[in-house]
Image 1 (cartoon, rainbow, N blue to C red):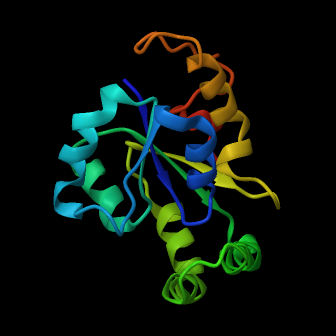
Image 2 (cartoon, rainbow, N blue to C red):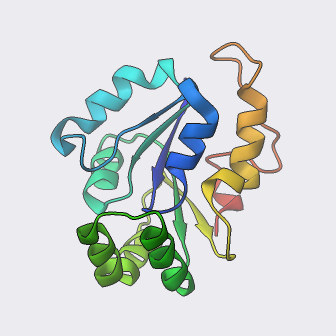
Image 3 (cartoon, rainbow, N blue to C red):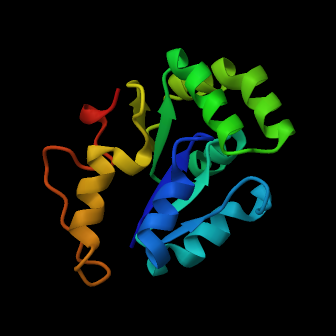
Length: 167
């Protein structure tokens, strides 16, 4: 069984997906019906090591209501300019950039305020820090590269889904 990662826009899920190949699956807000996202994710979780879901409050709420654990990767509020610049550089659609600019601090605060026992937060506070270079994710990927599905080994010092290691 893989892990579920809720990724804030611009945190590097596409980069990680392109690097990691067929071991990851992305459900993004534009390609999935939120009413069915839990069923869709649970139907493929055994086929992938990482399944990405939107970081929207509505998507996270659906997983919380079903008591499904997930990790959320998101930036600190201080990185607003960096995240907007990155979206401009990658030529994201203007409406995406506009929404990010308008809602960045609100969205980060919503994640900060989420106290669900199913939500394991990973705040990316340092400039240039993304999912694709996160030590926690890199350790997880290294542990699954040559392991048969279902035999994933993650060291106890920095496991996924351990609230003691969250910001």
